[in-house]
Length: 78
Ligand SMILES: [Zn+2]
Image 1: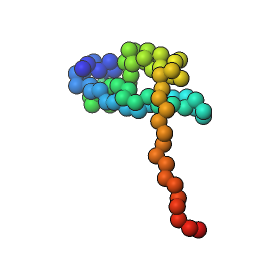
Image 2: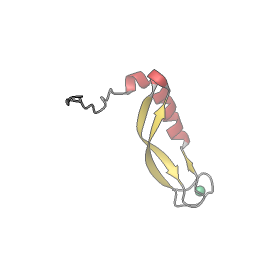
Image 3: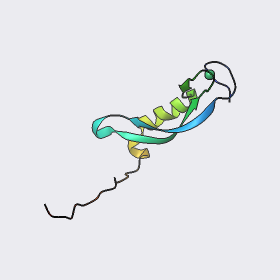
Image 4: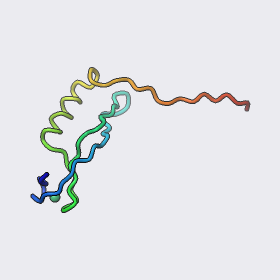
């Protein structure tokens, strides 16, 4: 695709995980398409992506799924 920054072709989409919010309202968005350009080295989100991020940010409580963290229980002696 064409880079919005330098206008050259060769920009690629990388899927990244974005952390949003803070504290108790922290949540992650996976597979966010980040455009990276090897010509100018710029990385950016398209207007479409930013719109979707904003939509998720506003409705994240409905859109997120609880994912338990891997948890190990310590069973040995002190
Ligand atoms: Zn570029």
